[in-house]
Image (spheres, rainbow, N blue to C red):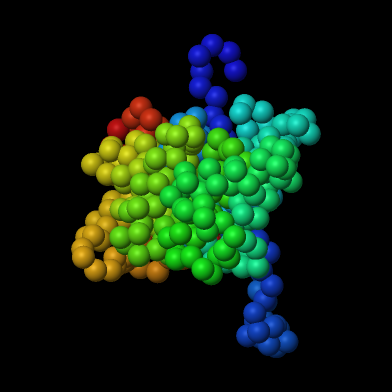
Length: 337
Ligand SMILES: Nc1ncnc2c1ncn2[C@@H]1O[C@H](COP(=O)(O)OP(=O)(O)O)[C@@H](O)[C@H]1O
Ligand code: SF4
Ligand SMILES: [Mg+2]
């Protein structure tokens, strides 16, 4: 903590999340006939370490089900971890004072994919945006209305509409309401989970531009989660690639796109769709994504990897620095030495 070392806003070390899954109907029937099912635990996040520095935009990418939202929710502090460490501004959560715990909660906010289901349909916009600053006493009651108007302007909404309900807005406008609500508690860090995925392509670009404008205006730091490498390319300083609960590669964005190291990243990049006039089509890497209920041994990617060697199914490759600022978890990096 001394000298000019940068202290990350949020850092997770070896963080994990396991969900216990109850047996489905077929399994319950089968168990009546004596079948056994031991794989009830979903390893949604399996030992992830990631530090996000002030002012950084980190993209988190991977196929659906790989654990992005679970990791994002733990980083945003709204989902308890099963194991590992969570640090906020250089202090581990176990050592927080009550004031630090409160700060960590407010300073890290989350923007969700689907604004319709994350906004209370029975509340007016003024109450949706104004609730948290009121509850947390961020400013006096009689200033809340002006504050909401200010925030609406900042996110490109007309304050004249502040007494309307969410359903009276378009999808893009609702996402702006969600963003204003997150901004209202003056966070330093926002976790944006597929924040534009539900929007039309033309609206996506507008909302992405808004995120970048707000970053400058409010000095924000982002973890930008997307299943689409194309979306994070233009806004991230650094990208982390996730596969089946683990980070397999992280690198500065330009390096990652120009010369991906990990075979999974390479496969993903080969399949980045063209952004045409019409719909984006996103094809997953060949082969089924294995189940996090029963993940493959060794390197999780080995059943789909074109370069798999015998040790890949036995030994888990460590995420290690292969060039400055660039980390990859693949045994090929040892072989080449
Ligand atoms: N509340 C939950 N209970 C049980 N399993 C869950 C829960 N949330 C997520 N999972 C499982 O954890 C894995 C990772 O999910 P998620 O984090 O949503 O992935 P992503 O956001 O990358 O699509 C999936 O297998 C998902 O089914
Ligand atoms: S460790 Fe082996 S299986 Fe995993 S990505 Fe590298 S070469 Fe492929
Ligand atoms: Mg998700």
